[in-house]
Image (cartoon, rainbow, N blue to C red; front, side, top):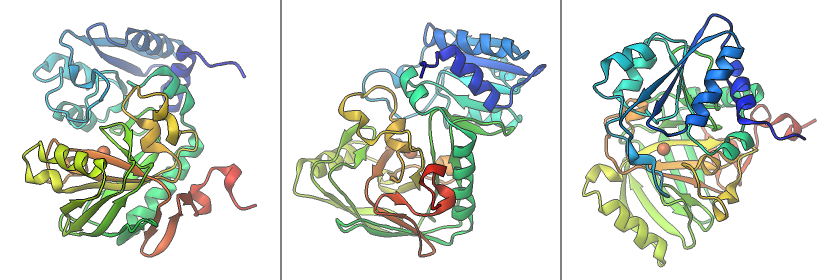
Amino acid sequence: MAVRSFPHMSRDMLELCGIEEGQSVAVLSQGHQRTDYVDAFLAAAEQLGAHAFNVRLPRVDGSLDGDVGTWEVGETPLAGNRRAIEALKQVDLVVDTVFLLFSKEQLEIQAAGVKVLLCIEPVEHLRQMFPTVELRERVEHGERLLSRAQSLRFTNEHGTDVRYRLGAYPVITQYGYTDTPGRWDHWPSGFLFTGGADDGVDGMVVLAPGDIIFPFKSYVQTPIELTIEQGRIQDIRGDGFDADLLTDYMASFGDPDAYGIAHIGWGMLETAQWSILATDRRGMGMHGRSFYGNVLFSTGPNGELGGPNATLCHVDIPMRNCSLYLDDEPIVVDGDVVVDDLKPRALRTP
Ligand SMILES: [Fe+2]
């Protein structure tokens, strides 16, 4: 099969986002970064008959530079640039090649009914995990199940058994494109999540060899036991190096809110690859967060869900081979999705 070029993918992406003749697309960029992405999206928008322009900011935010790829998001280069913000609020779709996630500028743009698509990952990752309408349908089925659940419990054979009281926070979906006004998404991704009540997460999480810790972008080698009471990590234990590393990292923030529990959900993208970090550490880690059947456990802030925890210490931990239950009904069993409507067609029961 011929490899799809980035310009070709950009056009397919804009079509998935519902862009058609007469609509408008703004591509947000900074400095000289990702000019190839900007050019491709502008050309694709024109091919579709849409009006397109580039908002290019002079200041470059370096928080995503380097190997680590951080989720610490404070001030964006858009902050204070009122004219640029207003321009972005006028269009149907903003393609963000900067990374506005969680910023008040992004929330203002979304509130104006603008669709926002984040696109900053390496081209190969964008290609490998290009989304489909079928992925969206499966993720939205998960959203229905998660929205009506009162409780979420997940376990693994290493001793994890933790329960979340649900209902306090909305469900957020990510399926890699957006054609819903005011909605944000990130190409590429394939998962969904919500949060437990602030004092409603209790139990034990045991990270096992092969689980991934972001932002470390590394695989756990030795088990780490996290004791959680009333939505807080009370204790981090383990005989190996990994427990020391996580303990030191979290302590370095000097912030009690670092020990809060953030979002919880599961991955649904069968084209995402768990083992990718063995050979490819580029990007923010969307393979790791999205791979099929992972339970995505995370600690720290819950501002993206509307919660009060605003700590800068955010750790995302995709875990393998877990079982996840909603109101005690199995959704994922030993790392495999077991609900037919959540599976890719090829994996469904005939
Ligand atoms: Fe996260």
